[in-house]
Length: 113
Length: 111
Image 1 (cartoon, each protein chain N blue to C red):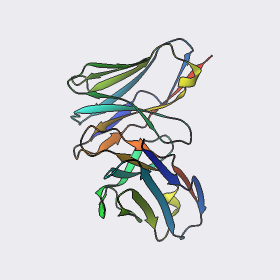
Image 2 (image 1 turned 90 degrees about the vertical axis):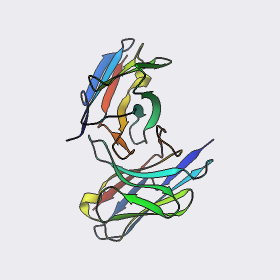
Image 3 (image 1 turned 60 degrees about the vertical axis):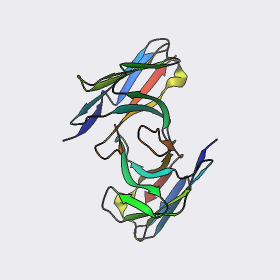
């Protein structure tokens, strides 16, 4: 069966520090991969998605970036965090094709001080 | 502008009753709609998918309807239990075949 791992579960970082959140998927190949941010009381905001190694599409211009160095690895990064980057970050995967459900990791709660 | 609105932030019902959650959308023409459950501090979990040519879909105590004329989906949980307490999100396919999520409705089932 497929599993998705996301870490760390919580992270407290000072403003201006770098960020690296990692997500890996097991049990499937060539998945679509996604990074979302969820603010309290609001829907999931799609940040990045990837349909293959090295292929990243950005939905929202900001100081975050994403990379997919391997088929089942998706990394969310920032060189300098802002206060507004605080939130709940979720990684997800789906099979390729339309109508595919997305399968989420347990998220990272990021607090910027 | 495009909107996905879930009827209320919170819904409280008594155990055993049927919970009905609403998802309305504006300026979308989705081919399908999905419902997810999210527990506090966890990622959403997929529950059901319904296509535009399907009026109704059932899975155990769950039932979803999809009315493309009203631009609305209803999500029902029959014989609700305290364990059904969670936030429920609807999602639909956006114009770029991406998935767009509503903000969710927090359901509390009281014993």
